[in-house]
Amino acid sequence: MYYNNNTLIYLDGEFVKANESSTDLYSQTLHYGYGVFEGIRAYKTNNGTKVFKAKEHYERLKKSCELVNIPFNSTVQELVDATYELLQKNNLTDAYVRPLVFCDPNMSLTKPNNVSIMICAWEWGAYLGDKQLRLAVSSYCRPHPRSIKIEAKVCGHYINSILATTEAKDKGYDEALLLDSDGYLAEGPGANLFFEKEGVLYTPQLGNILPGITRATVLELAEELGIEVKQGLYTLEELESADCAFYCGTAAEVIGIESVDDKQFHKKWDDTLGKKLQEAYSQLVRKTETLVYTTL
Image (cartoon, rainbow, N blue to C red; front, side, top):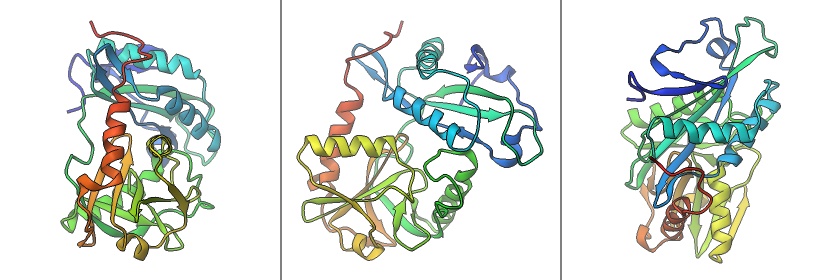
């Protein structure tokens, strides 16, 4: 699904075959989840392939490393260039890109001395599909921000997401909705939450959520479109009384929510601010300026 015998990955400055690569079974990342990653999308445009906000993603990768004391030995521009080259070598246009910083062998609970960086890519459609989502409020909450660096995209943090998504799907739902440790709305397992009420958008404030790059893009688009957005602490009851809601994330893009715990939103998706932002986001990521290469 993700690679074949000809697929190349970027590993510590070189392009090597995915099926011939390996990692150490004593890696601190494998044993403790002590690593950081990013999710980036590349889009096909009339002028070639465009990696959306590549610089911002690699800057967040660097920041995540700094927050959890993992060495970061590459420059942002070096990784941006490597990403475009990787896509070209694998003849990929519309693709999902996954950089991963992983640690050397270390069985102690101390920061690593050495790390490696890998970038891989594969064809991947919208992560949550293209239909409105049926959500279940999760029995799991987001970790308390004093227990981890919530703003870092750390491998081990996503056990929380896996548990929440698995629980929701086992109950017959499409995805989960997580609250924070105080019971306020937080986010999805891999996406940020927005909801609309009386022509205004609301979204949980930073502090208990991952500061998503797509979330920031939606905020930028909303400002351009003259849509008022409020950020704060909101309850599940406030969401349930909203006109509509949507998730956004690099993998999910912008996708509408049909219901939460079988309570449906009454406003038709096509008439919502979310739909307007979904269309604006789709146009933005496929704009053709500032391209680095044209597919051969």
